[in-house]
Length: 111
Image 1 (tube, rainbow, N blue to C red):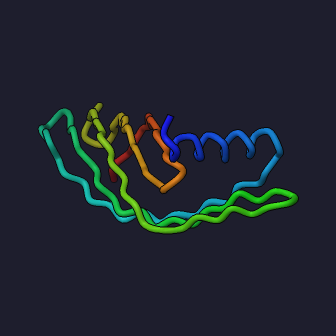
Image 2 (spheres, rainbow, N blue to C red; image 1 turned 180 degrees about the vertical axis):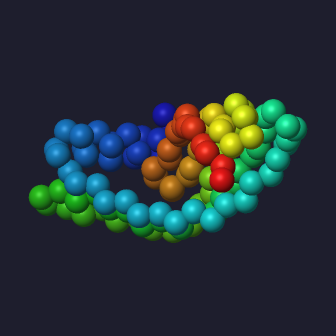
């Protein structure tokens, strides 16, 4: 196990075990690029710049991290009709010692 992974696990484990409070703020500026776009569906990629600031606060210690990093995503949009769409997207965001992977499913209405 690498040192960075070990430190991430230790911080997360201590946060869960010792009831630490986590404060997280981030701003993402991203661009989307269509990989496939036709009348029925759309496949796209996302690249973002992340500006973040987060801290783990316990009764005895505060660990604070801030900086800039990147995010990647891949999404799929399926048009049910001209105004209604189903969406799914996978995102990976790197926040130094805290990385996130999310999968989102949604519904969109176009006006």
